[in-house]
Amino acid sequence: MVIAAAGVIRIIVLWSVLGHRASDAGTAAAPALRGQVKLRAEQLAPLGTQVLTATAFHDAVLAEGELAVNADTTTRVFSPYSAGVINVLAGVGDRVRRAA
Image (tube, rainbow, N blue to C red; front, side, top):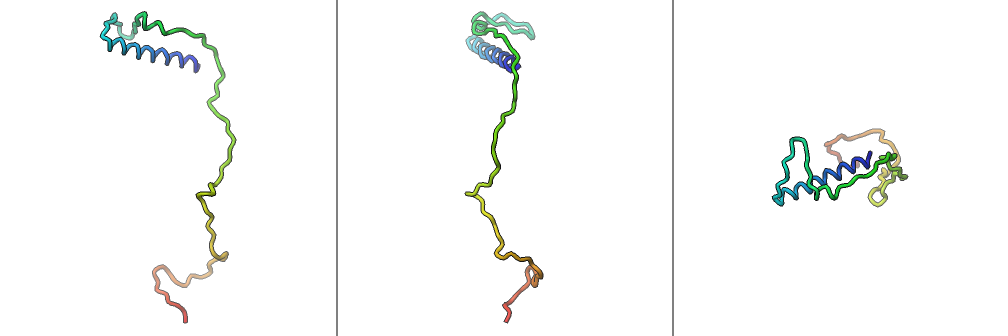
């Protein structure tokens, strides 16, 4: 199926490239009917046929790896004391002073 698609793409590309060259050169080809394409002998010369065969195709790639932290760009953050807060004596914006 992949080979058939590649063959069709090759024919379309060659047709468009050779068709543009002919129109650029000003060579008048016989007018084609609507929905038809007429190629001259020199345009047909590079085209050929190939025998197609069915081939199994897998669109996945297997890879092994691991997720890791970049030690050069990360750091661990620890609290200075390992204790919990029991009571908060001041709120946000409160004025505080040193105890005597």
